[in-house]
Every structure is written in C-alpha cells, then in structure tokens.
Amino acid sequence: MKMPPDITPYIGQLIKFRRDLHTHPELKFEESRTSDQIAAWLQALGLPMHRGMGGTGIVATLRGTGPDADDPARAIGLRADMDALPVQEANNFEYASANPGRMHACGHDGHTAMLLGGATLLAKNRDFNGTVHFIFQPGEEGGAGAQRMMEDGLFKQFPMKAVFALHNWPALPAGQMGVRIGPIMASANRFEIRVHGKGGHAAQPHTTVDPIAIACAIVGELQKLVARGVDPLDSAVLTIGKIESGTVENIIPNDAFIYGTCRTLGTQTQAQLVEGIERISHHVAQAHLGSAEVIIKPGYPTTVNTPNEARFMARVMGATVGEANAHDDVLPAMTSEDFGFMLEQVPGAYGFIGNGRNGQPGVNLHNAAYDFNDDILGVGAGFWDRVVREWFAARS
Image (cartoon, rainbow, N blue to C red; front, side, top):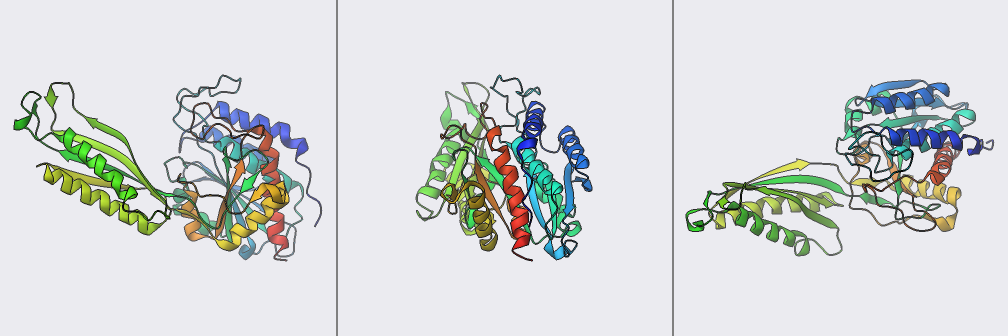
C-alpha cells in the first residue's frame, strides 16, 4: 500500500470551503446551495454522484484500483451531515452567517469539509481494494434526514458492509478523538401534554378547574420518573422546555400546554418513561377534576456502535492522533443523532473528534458563539483516508 498523499496542500481550500458554508448556512432540507457547492468539489475530483436523495442529499462513489474493488460486498460508507440550525449567530468574524436566524452552530460545515478532504486524498491515490460511498446527508437537526435517505434507497442503491460518521466534540481538546462500543448517543422522544380544565375569573377560583395549577403538579411529578423510577446506573433525562397557558393576569384559562423531551440509552427505559408520562398526566389531572391528553412524538433511536466497527475506529483514531490521544471508551452523550437510524440497518461506528482550542474545551454545540476549529480539518480528512485504506487492507 502506497503512502497516501499529504493533506497540507489542500488545507487552504478546505478552510475556504468550510468558511463559505458557515457564511451561507441552510436549514434542514433547504441545503440547495450547500449541495451545489459539495457537488462542484466532487465533480472536480471526477467522482460519479447521485443527487437529491432525501431531498438535497448526495452520495458520491469512489472505487479503488484493487482486484476486488468492484465487489459490492467490500463497499463501506462515510457520512457527513450538512444542515444548519435556526440560531442567530453572535460571532462577528468575517465569515459569520449572512443568513439572519440561521447558523452552523453544530459544526456540520466542518464535518462536510473533513469528508471532502478525505475524498480528495483517496481520489488522489486510489490504491485500495474496495469501494467507498461518501454520504452527504441533509436534515440531521430534527429532520431525520438519515431516515429519509434510507427511505429513498440509500442502502439498496449503495449496499455497504459498514458505515462510519464523525462529530466534532468541544469537550475534547483538538488533537484528541474518541469512540465507544455500544450506545454513544441517546434516543430522544418529544412529548406534548394538553391539560384541560374550566376557566373563569381569577377572583373566583372555586368556580374553576385551574389548568395551570394542574400543569404545575404534573411537571413536579414528572421529575420523579427519573429520580425515583430509573436505575441509578442507567441514564435518562426528562426535561420540560416549554409551558403555555393564559392570556392576562385576572383570567383562569381553560387549557394549559406542556412540552418536553425524554432521552435514554436503552429502548426499555424509553418505554418506561413514555408509560410514566402518560400515567402521571392522566391521573394527576383527574385528581384535580381536569383531564389531560398526551401526544408522544417519536424522535431518533439510540446511536449504538457495533463492537467490531467501534474497535476498528478506535485503532484508526490511535494511528491518526496517537494512542495517548485516542479514547476507546468515551462517555455516551444524552444528545441524539439520526445516524442511529443507519446503524439499525448497517454495522458501523460514530465517533468524536476534539474541537477544543489551546488544550481547553471549546464553545458548546448549539451555542450562538460556537465555531468549528479549522485546525482539525486536516486531522479529520486524514482520519477518513486511513479508515478506508486500513479497512480494505485488513480484508485483502
């Protein structure tokens, strides 16, 4: 196996590309300009591509020069997400978002650039015995774009033995990477509780059934679902993020609305929380002479790394950043990721690349002051190059 080409000559282009995406962020399934920019880069590499999968998604294919490179049983996939968030950017650098209320606050611009960097290295030296599909996915931020690409035939049109993804992680300093076997990101369901009472004058509460008081009682009881209902060695989060009710101070309304999310690392615990939300809501409302409707909005499944692929990813991380900087048992996060849908159908692994600065943690994801650290673009591109070469070298 020949030495792969050096990423250094392409770093300037990757930074320029990444910052261009940052200046022009597009929300889920609106990534038309982003998709065009990605396609132009891939076309310059001479890679055939399929556009429009899942709406604005792209799948580009690169075959190596080995004797079995065309065998579909040897293909793997590498995935990057490309959508932005509905956040007003607080940064004032020259490449800050030019689209009001939209921002690359999760680093998908960097994920895309790293994968394009990996594709560039691999296209310059195709001395590997297999096929790699580069998956540029829309709608990760709440749109389940991975699922939509699968519904459009991702794994049927592009069969693959394994699929891998990488997310920047501000809690890790730049130059470090991490992965784990098993759950690495939580499942997430959203829910809405509609509390129905009987409105009236604020000075005559005895003639009403106050839905706000009922909603407050429900919220208080819901906190016990995790504190007293989940094994302390398990992981679960239940958060109420929004309550709506009423119009003015002296009117008790008819209804109140509670909105929240519950996240777990296991399907049984998730089912337990859903049952508890429904039970508590109905019974507490009835105890106060009101009623409640519960609407569960299923979200992303747990992102579960398969053992062989997670171990492989850990080895490649060690070869990329050094054994001391590669962690094979990072703590799982209670955030969620639609890459979990892909891992339900194809073995694979999802890992973290450090996005801190100067040895310190970076600004948190989804924060208006966040920015992707361009210093790690070369690390990510080199990692993807190694993933492909070492995967096929081990199977020659």
